[in-house]
Image (cartoon, rainbow, N blue to C red; front, top):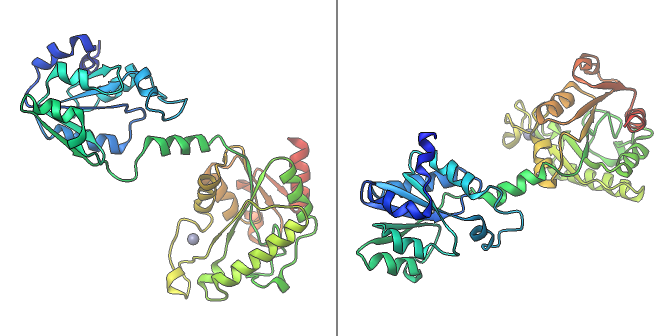
Length: 343
Ligand SMILES: [Zn+2]
């Protein structure tokens, strides 16, 4: 047996093994289902309070009683214990099967009882118990921003809906350069019908567009928002619903100081696509991107989008993008009809 696994001890043997540990013995308990940084920081802090740290994990039956959802715990008690045993801060891991560890604490008589989170320790039965033999009881707050529950939600989001990420200028509307007024906005012929076909095939429609004209002071966020709203309404009347529109207002050489930054959202960076996936539970691998520039193809690649298609516009950059694209089409309409026919 690996030495590390020797730290995992059956409940029946726990008292005997604990007797050999350096004092004072610190005791804590929890499910520790999917170990994250917050757990590790907490256990390290707890270990600093004494000579040894004993962690009692809820058995699977005990963990289910906590009501965190039918699929929880995701990992079996033996596996959760083995992961904890791998931490340098942990001296011993054992198990408890009840809703609370009171009976185990009574049997082990630790010197310090620690609980993670904002607990009023004075009200806990465990506190009265450890004090009865002169022990201490205290709470250690968790590090903000880490939670197994939110982690699980994010992971489940990866199995989500497929999306069609669409560049705007040159794909949806004719690229007249820095289009920002509805009067100048002309849909590319066939684009609306193509978007409806994608929607009918189950794709969430997500527009991802670089709008460096905002950083360059050519138009404002409000101008962009107004144009977006008119585009949305026009599409809605044609039976096409946009799931979301993401734009990057930045450019490193912009003239508006607030937007003159190197950001992680301007394509070829994948920021807009990754944010869309997070906020709408999209499956990137099942998704596709249609754009008219190398930056669109590169952003899709960097984000892990399954397929990236280039459409020809008058843009000179298009030709150079051949290598990055899975296929090249004349326009969105041709692209969608061929892609959906081949799917
Ligand atoms: Zn940006």
